[in-house]
Image (tube, rainbow, N blue to C red; front, side, top):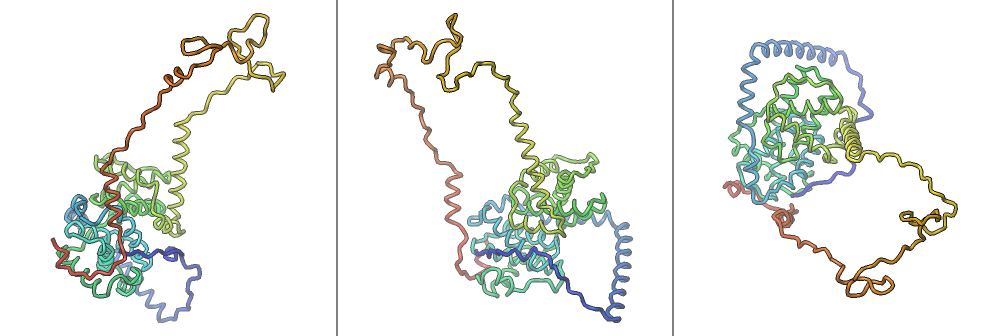
Length: 405
């Protein structure tokens, strides 16, 4: 499995010089007509939504349960390990931004990938190929036709590791495995509903999207329902940005656990994802999240280490700063500074004449701490095992029939 590293980060840079062309009268009339048609369609959709909203939400809840991946089944993969997932998600985020696809396309891509991995055995050299096939299917399903990636473009992003026919074969194999069930209510769908209902700002919406994409990198959220993820991410986004929380008191245990787990995975986001959300049109929410976490860390440090009480000024005489320190305890009357250092030699059986410790007594008094021997653990064994399965750059033919178990 090969991943191309982009140094320039051009996928997340906005165009500074927009193309400005004079429109003819005919093109202006067409644009006005399209805008009128869009307004009429939106009004009809709103009326239909008000009438069939309950049925639509019931259908979405059913689809949400039917198309939810199982992380426990992905754990049974023999070659695919969870440490490989961030590298593939980074690749998909870059490809998604390079082709300017819709936000919901990325979430649908990861859903198709996880559903396939929970039903088929995937070899490590095919892991990136499955991700590309899922991106192709998701883009064809819900994105614009002129933005659907071409196979040769994906192959170039994969450093030419696969043939064009391999992408087509894997795409068909993914569709057959999922019984051609592609539709899935993504977290973006539920986020849009909540944002419209609660009238959240664009900044809160972008922060919630950033948090949801951070969750794509972690196993803990593979089997989390998109509706739960949307509500938890929006609540966390409001808290980070200092916005008032709209809590109706109907939070259940799963939503509370999801919110807590999300807050624990925000400290080390992917550099690729942070660069994407540092752009102005996404409200630079990655920078704001980093500032918020830095403030929370500073508060925690101050709470853990309270300031020491002020020391009282010393009243001791300091006439001669080069003199040997004196021992004040047990001072002889008439001697202001007490005994001169060193004091009287200690007495004891272990000390010989003139206060010198004997060699045998010195050796007997030393106690060396015992260093515990490290015991082999399963984590260390798993690490070496995972290192043997790092993705390589080997060419392999795809035979879908061999991948089905």
